[in-house]
Image (cartoon, rainbow, N blue to C red; front, top):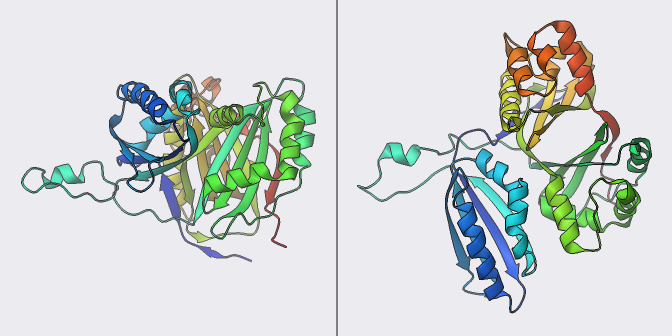
Length: 373
């Protein structure tokens, strides 16, 4: 059986300006401490490449509610900053005075300027070219490492959990969780319909999930205490592996679809270039009716890039397409950006197949959320 599907494309690489809104709820009496922390953070962020401006706003209805808005030249420099260890250290003083936060990120699609002072060309600069077509699904991933030698025990624990119920609230549903390992690295890819943060908080409270998290705690390379909000926040901030590109091919899908995760270890400071390259390759492949890739999501943080593939047919049947190096000189381009990519640069089919096999992560579990009772 086959089904018709509409092409979906969402990307951080379209060159449009980015508007970020951080909603904060302060503890009572924490305003002075918050303002001091904000001044420190503001002065630091002002020097970050790609940052344009920011504003601090306070609610006229509830003085404990604040809003920080910032504008960036595009999404990649913001993502590089927000996922950096430097950002973790910069925002740490905020944690003790903020009860709750929520981050919203939007590309600029339309803009109104002052008549006679802004040209049409200036208005169009940095604007998103057209509205994106989405499917109502938010994609996110987490990655962390476990102590060498514990991989088999961790894999067994992660494969044995009971899926939580799909319903989070009236607007949010869990859809799918896919777990992979490569050596001692774990990657957990999550699909949510609705509010991602609400879903993550809901999952963290479920006893079956908490039992698994507690069971793997002794094996983590980076210690965490889930009973300590700051420790948990730091761990999951550092583990975040955001989706920077997603495309679902239009046309006919297939019931015979296999899910794979490919791990790309980029050279130092080359992670963004690898993610951009793979995104361009997947966009081009999505226009080919012979393309076996039903859907692709590229996740990137620092020099770690993971590409999640939903593939019609076996992975090794289309090594160049599956690895993202279809076309002249593509293997050479990607090879220059990757650790241990020297043989891939040669462009030989045998080396492409070997590199693909090494990049293919071990699937631990791939589950849809449990149905509502």
